[in-house]
Every structure is written in structure tokens, then in C-alpha cells.
Image (cartoon, rainbow, N blue to C red; front, top):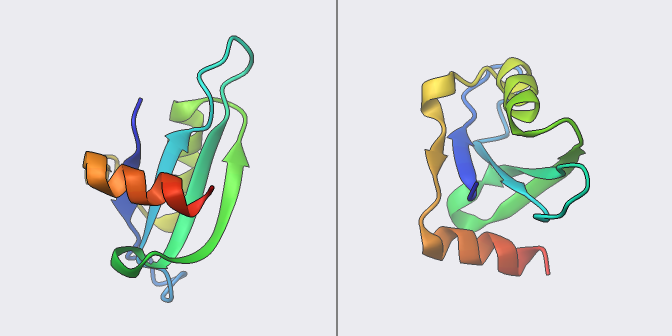
Length: 90
């Protein structure tokens, strides 16, 4: 799985505009996914992040419920967008 993005339009989180979710490592161990919340995704203004331990679908479901995201709103990041996200986390 590559990096995926969803907009946040929730009235419960008016200061956020999007989030990125991706797998941290492709290891034989448990699947770890990192969600990064953005004040302004285009400007890479990060609000915070969270690690999910229960797999991609569980992470997506939890994020959809928490931020009023519809399943069809997820999209893959372009390679350039993914590289910028990766560079920002070191």
C-alpha cells in the first residue's frame, strides 16, 4: 500500500483540512500505519500524528468515524506528494 490521503471536512475538526495514512514498515511483524493530520496539507502544516497497530482497514475505519471521512474520499498520493511526506518525517 502506498500513501493515501483524505480530506477532513468535519465540523468537529474545523482547523484540519486533511490526513495521510501509510504503512511505516513492510516487516514480517505486525502492520504499523501512521496517520498524519494536517492544518493545511498543501503547505505541509502538521497538526499531529497517530500510529495504528491493527492494520489498514481498521485504521481507515477509525479515521473515517473520527473525522467524518467517506470511504470513497480516499485517494492515492502522487509519488511527488509521497516523497514530500516521507521527507518531512525524516
